[in-house]
Image (cartoon, rainbow, N blue to C red):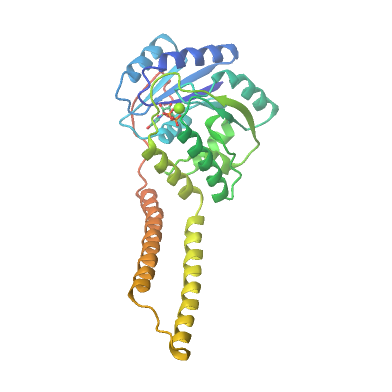
Length: 310
Ligand code: UDP
Ligand code: MG
């Protein structure tokens, strides 16, 4: 059996089309399947529309969260509820074409455990989004020791064994594509063109994008902290040299050592760096605090369409 996990947040304009396209593709694959829509606290009619599909179609399931927990939490829930031998993950907005599912399934039958979609091109997105995404994927790759493919989101097929491995990872910070890379297994890519949204607006405004990038970096790397150490070291060396120079000037020459302006400059500069590094440490400490509280990643209000196992 195949499972399809679809995170949904205020997608009433696209969800019917998504359901149709996904159903069409899945029916063509001649295997039993389930479509799991995870409604991440939508404030529009998404939940009611999906509940309608559930009534008419026994392949459809709905998980309703008690509030908005975020894209990664929604996918996490879908992965936990999925019972397929292979699980497809796809956004609700049809930016990624479900029509390549059969190709992904072929690779899976060849023995690959993860088949991820890699974007060779992005269409209909702003220059800023494309540029920031490009920088983001390359930055993350440099920041971690794990083999993380660039230009790859959550759009992919994962084998049940991979799903089970990822489900066992206890952390609350769910940067899914990172976790899937981390567990290993045989992974391969299929190139595709990322289209524009079928309808509706992006649910990732700038603030959320920055928070997402911070989560990704802190979850997989403490290189920023190491960089802070290196920076501190460099500044110390520079100041030792500077002190040696002014001592020399004061003791052995007639030059008057300059006064306030340079002192203030140095103080402000080092204070700025110190505060920045304190903030950076705070980012990590805050995340330790989040993990330690051990709260669930999401809360389910109700489910529809699952059998008694759930
Ligand atoms: N999404 C979600 N919860 C959120 C934000 C987004 O479940 O808090 C879903 C959204 O409905 C979509 C997917 O995550 O299916 C990706 O969001 P979007 O397409 O807005 O992001 P973008 O493609 O613009 O980065
Ligand atoms: Mg999108």
